[in-house]
Image 1 (cartoon, helix red, strand yellow):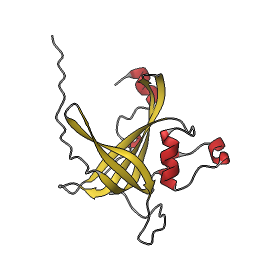
Image 2 (cartoon, helix red, strand yellow):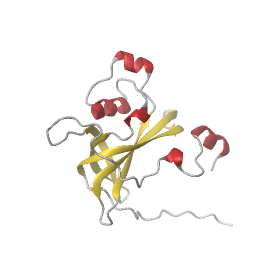
Image 3 (cartoon, one colour):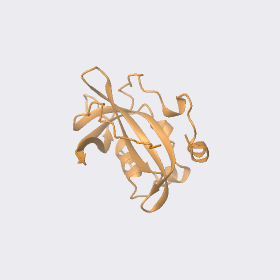
Length: 167
């Protein structure tokens, strides 16, 4: 018996490109993921924009990273831009708690990329949020409350459980 899978057309509204105010609403451990360079530990940062679609819902965008704070890693570059300062050697030695960033205000630069006749909204950069006085304001914006963190969802499996037991 055939098992046919088809691509569903994108039913989600596409976040407009440009600079948008947002709040980090989740940091998701994706576990080991295959890449052209072998299995790499990955994570995803999930942002909720202050911009709403036609139905009044905030746009939710995520960006994937390799689990690394190497000086050339995209995660480190974005986190340093996000907080508006570089990490100290002491902070890097002790590690960076991504949970501490959840709820923080920022600006995200969204760009549209086309691939195989489909347009995707991708986060190009994460920048600090500045209030009307031009000062960095880490907790000025608040999330809508509509997004539920991945670890809080029913049936959540840790990356290790998922790898061992599958779906």
